[in-house]
Image 1 (cartoon, helix red, strand yellow):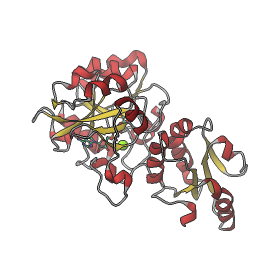
Image 2 (tube, rainbow, N blue to C red; image 1 turned 30 degrees about the vertical axis):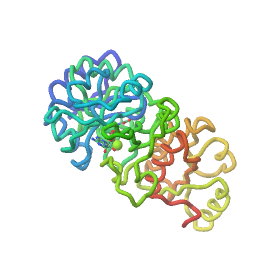
Image 3 (cartoon, rainbow, N blue to C red; image 1 turned 90 degrees about the vertical axis):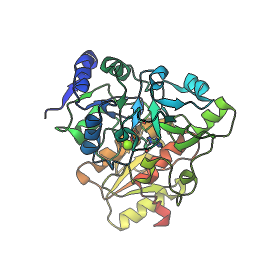
Image 4 (tube, rainbow, N blue to C red; image 1 turned 180 degrees about the vertical axis):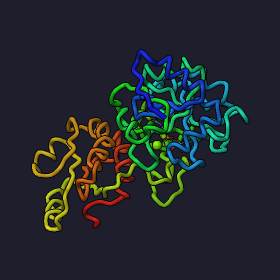
Length: 337
Ligand code: TXA
Ligand code: MG
């Protein structure tokens, strides 16, 4: 199968293919998604096959607006309106209880709840509108690889396996959406993202807990997807705390390890020799935007023996960055080696 690249004036063609049951990758503000018509179970099944994704891991249903969720949702949490008003379109996925039978078990993994999100991307909202149905969309990478933040990343992983990719350049945020469970009494964060715990608490005026597994590693996550080892390149990744850079690089030198640096300009400029992916700026936003792209670039062709990645404090957006980085590094910090 030839994988076509569609630009903004070819959304009609991409939508027509989705209606025929084909798979089309689409841009969002977080990462690229692997789209299928959520109402065509056979197409949704293809999504799992193409990605190599475990079938018990449910998908997000991408909607064009809030009313599109009404056909599926059984009852809304009392805070829903306030949350949607403040954060949609945007990087916030909401879990609701659904009307029995309204979505295929292929989409929900057989759960009585489902995940919904309205992405903040004009091209993709037009794509959903023109398809006339919500789109499922896991990240458009091969399962276990870093999520794609450009159309080229998608092409690299899925060329020949999907009908097309809608190209809107690099994504702005760089990690997947926050997942907020609204199916119980207490809204709970199942996956940290760019809509942070602090922002949610500020807007809602209540404490928003993190799911147990985000606080204690031994706990089983409520979000099925969080239990898998995600986001990992083939090259080992070590997290480097601010005070450990000199020691880590000395260790690499004496062990003849070729290092790939993944760091802010401030840190990277102190170490001129190594292979490197330098974030655009010295900010957590720039680091988050560059994280997956950097992991992919340094892993490409296996040029380095180990990737040294900068750590950030685990609050605000840093919680999302560190959540993804820890998975890529299989929890390994340099000092603990
Ligand atoms: O930013 C994003 O969310 C991207 C873009 C493409 O929208 N999509 C994405 O999808 O990251 P995916 O499939 O990689 O992640 C969906 C997460 C998984 O961790 C899954 O387990 C969880 O949402 N999830 C889906 N339905 C759920 C449910 N009913 N209850 C709990 N967790 C659920
Ligand atoms: Mg994913």
